[in-house]
Amino acid sequence: MDLAEIYSRIWDCLDRAAAGKNQPFKTMQAATIGLDGSPNVRTVVLRRVSEPQSEIIFHTDLRSPKIAELSREPRIALVGVDPVRNLQIRAKGKAEIIRSGPERLEAWKSSPDHTLTVYRTALAPGTPIDSPDQAFGSGSAIAGEQKGFDNFCVVKVHIESLEWLEHSNNDHHERALYRREGERWSQSWIAP
Ligand SMILES: Cc1cc2nc3c(=O)[nH]c(=O)nc-3n(C[C@H](O)[C@H](O)[C@H](O)COP(=O)(O)O)c2cc1C
Image 1 (cartoon, helix red, strand yellow):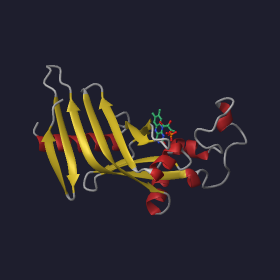
Image 2 (cartoon, helix red, strand yellow):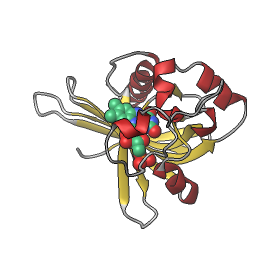
Image 3 (cartoon, protein in one colour):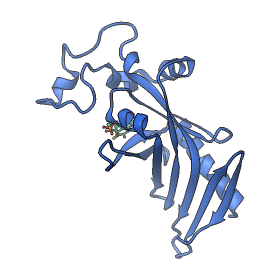
């Protein structure tokens, strides 16, 4: 593959991940800079991607620590792996937290109900509890038609760089770097 083909393949992998179940890169690890300056990383589900807009979108809880971190420092890095094909995709960019408006509402409405349970707890993510039941147990759920919506937000990552690494079985590894420069992307091979 040449650099242009790899670039298309990256977005193709991300597109499939966002659209399908059990796809490689459906979950990626998202790293932020903690409030104390230390790194923090966690798994998120890719909900939507857009190559023309250079965006990767995930959903999260407004009460979660990552929102405080991204509000202070929007730089974010994502990494995912396809362990079968030995592929790694890394992305870096700036996170925009969408706390209101039609895009957030649409994201909420189009999410399967079971994925919304986590937003319906009375306790903020990370709150110390005595046992797992306490988070979801009776009395902790918020009542009402819009249950949990107040806690829900969309995180849109405006991608500034992408990296591809393919570890092939014959030791011919390929690593490529793409940087967004205004409306275009620069592309280059880098040593694996
Ligand atoms: C398979 C899997 C998928 C997850 N997807 C999300 C997600 O899409 N959004 C999210 O906020 N947390 C998701 N989580 C939970 C996070 O990894 C993390 O534990 C939680 O968001 C708290 O992160 P924070 O304390 O850094 O804010 C997922 C966890 C797993 C195991």
